[in-house]
Length: 129
Image 1 (cartoon, rainbow, N blue to C red):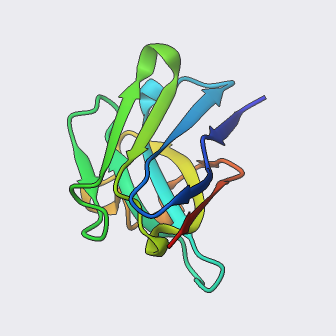
Image 2: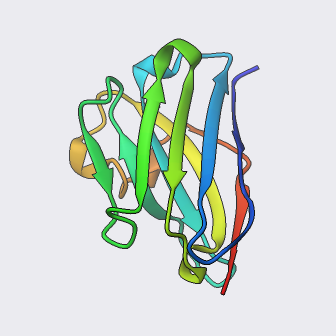
């Protein structure tokens, strides 16, 4: 069964850290761009937070999280991780990982949601003030 499973969300105080993991099963992540997206209860669209190319050589960070979040991947473990530091209440959202084909244009990495074939079920992150 092909699926992506996120984990690591939870409740944390402002300034705290969380580490999200995205594990793939049923397919090899090494052939895919992987992105982390988030959606707030009020948001109509999922915002691309951070995305990484299949070999890890190209990484995108949204301005809102630059310098605080770090994306990494371990293709041998079929896993992509998002380390989130210095969290603030504006980071509260459901976080989703997604996988799209490696040939996706770079400018689509965190903006072209339609490129992504597989989506996880999401993990909730709540940051209290």
